[in-house]
Length: 401
Image (cartoon, rainbow, N blue to C red; front, side, top):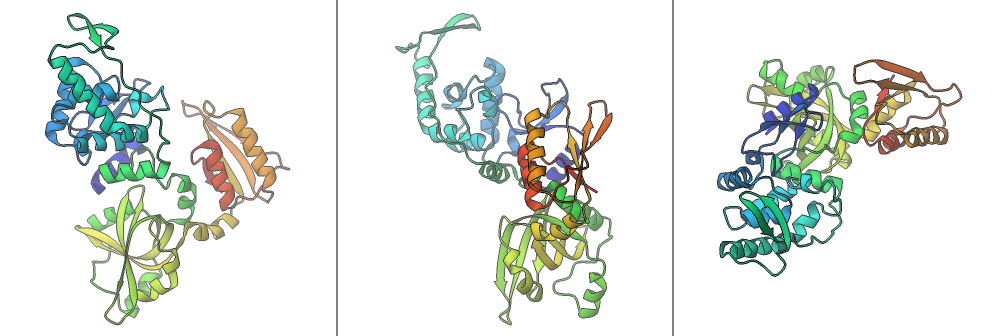
């Protein structure tokens, strides 16, 4: 999974879009598709979804190939529910977002709507398929379509009741559970610019160094004080989200912890021995975004961090933010509205300070244009300001100087 996450990250770094699974485009394995601009992209294979077996995947692909794309979720259920696609597979496809493209133009139908309606729609689909196999038309088979050998009857789809969609983190957590990592976004997306400011390495770089034999060999316990003192003078900092926290009690009765830290390129084990844990335990909670400083150990089999200090990203970024003199807003001229710029101006006026602003537009051909804020429009680029800018533009657009 970590290797796959690195491959996907590398594809994105090379401007190759990676799309999540889709019942109308995904095959068993990853495949190349064209996006809306006819640019080649990568589509997730259904085999990568936890809970999707080979027989079910083959059934979906064969049905789609023989009779065309699925029109809707009810259409999918009617065409495959009697076959080898069971409830577990259907649920996994819903939660992984494989039906999202069927309802792009109907936002009232979302993943939670499909999930809540799954049993009813599946039962309807099985009944419809049984009726069709007996050659019996239903009372409401009044919608005619043409295809195959000529006109044929088609039942109207049952209505899918609206349910409030899962929030962004719930959707991302489901993707991570089923696919092994995040696809449609990442919990760290709002913090990209801050993480760049306070980190000196990444999980991916650490594993590269481990494979190249450039790290201290792994040990089974704390280093002696001389080795620790020497190592602390060159301890790297990395940031990410804590996805697992396991606290234990040592034989001496002291508490320590084993953590899993995840960033955009993968995850790594973080070991926090008792003395360090006593100082930073308040920051150690599952779901917290933190900055970890410590000695890195590893070899070709893997790597880990022996943490000497852990703190929240907000706290770690305070000193860096104070040193910022200019904030660069990297915007797309074709996807930036007047309202967004007006809201940015209001935010700057509200948070008066000493920082200056620069808007940097980058055209599709790579040409850049920079516009300096008026001298009177200065602001304070604190943590709250950075989060509000993210809300205005819907993504991380900041650079710091």
